[in-house]
Length: 425
Image 1 (cartoon, rainbow, N blue to C red):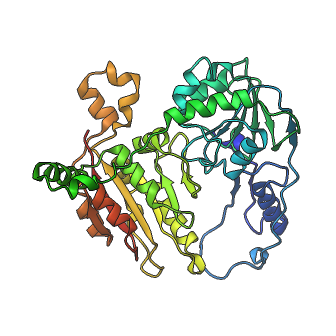
Image 2 (cartoon, rainbow, N blue to C red):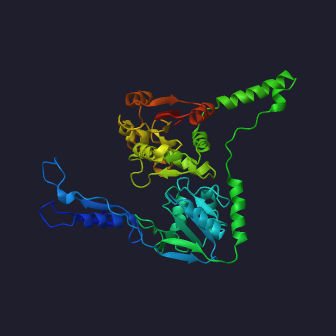
Image 3 (cartoon, rainbow, N blue to C red):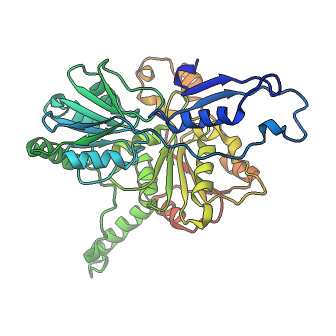
């Protein structure tokens, strides 16, 4: 089923049954995985062995690692400036997307999981703007880096046959929603006149779409007013701000603000990543995500791997995993950490609304019986996350206000923490 996505595959003979050059086979597989032909991707080696699977390694398999192959020079194209262009950054796009947008003076539509959500050309509220006929309706060319998955508006744009789509391919499934997408290895931008009118229209609309979730500044005049009523109102406003309960927007905003370039942030495939994509601004931080048909598989394990790798050699920083309760429970076994390995500096932040409310946005939520939705989609639960954390030896914190969450996120992290944020259904 997955053979078309493998860069190389083979069923190897049993050692001793054939005169196999194992070092050459290994080198061929690694070269294919690293992109010796220009496109990186997975390889599959089926290596059969006879029992007993113990004892010394056969001499034929005892080989030292070889040199790491160098990826082949990819096919690069230079884009002319003429068509009205947007740059779309999907998962794993990285800084290259921002660089292309800057070079072309083109609007940058960057998903929150792209690693390119920053810079002066970043478009806020891109979903609504793509639906606007005067902006999204006039796009003539889209340059795509990474794999966009978070919005129907982007998919709709890339499906239009009147839009030229140029997709930078790095491996895996080719992107071709309109049947005429051109796959390239890299893109550059030709010299020429910048379309300031096109860019200006997007930037003006983007500024109006920006979301500010900051609390209002304290009323200093009211707090120090000689009028008891005015002073009481100001004090109440400050207390209300401190006690303000968390919702999804405030949760993603707090995590985003607490994360810096020396940290790592992993978004789970939960409702929260779509909220983050809708409301968060630009910031140059390392962002990761597992996307695809089974996006919640192994989210906790992925986060632990990122944490262990990023702190190797004494590097600073914290890895934060932001996910929903169903995604956590789907991979709860990964909370079990080996006793003989260093504890990762990781905060797994769980928005717990008691079930998979990500499905609220699907059309089926408006037509299916409530009992069917609960059983087949929402999968409500009553799991005790504090007990789970204790069972696996993780520190558990349950926070209900923005102030408390900010304090937990900026406090020193010595080991694994499970931070539970209760949310309304």
